[in-house]
Length: 175
Image (tube, rainbow, N blue to C red; front, side, top):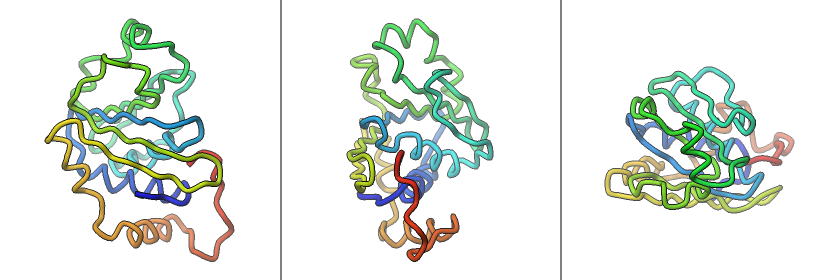
């Protein structure tokens, strides 16, 4: 799929959150500024999170309450899987909610096959190409949750956020 701005990235994630179940793991992979945190914000909205979701780069993990608990982990500042696991970032509480991991590639082979990978390509003012990859059949429900008419659904969601095609271009620094 393609998103053209942060609102589009949030809209896609919000739609995907409808498929969320307790214990789900979602890996977010993309360059700095690709929109991983925007995706997390939209996913949180889809879960009914009312708190402001921010990048947990300095605290490593933030927890939010919604329809399901949302555990938002950012591994940017960690060197690898050993550091993340030793720091207690992965624990049994996450079985009650959904865990989104930014920079998940830093967990290397420690990531279970059962997960949804969200690969985000593009930075700056460029549109984002977002690829969803289900690690096993149980995660295919996320792919099924993408609206059939994705472009129209994204525009509808932007309108709900108060944006219209005639508005000034939104900040695209962190789609």
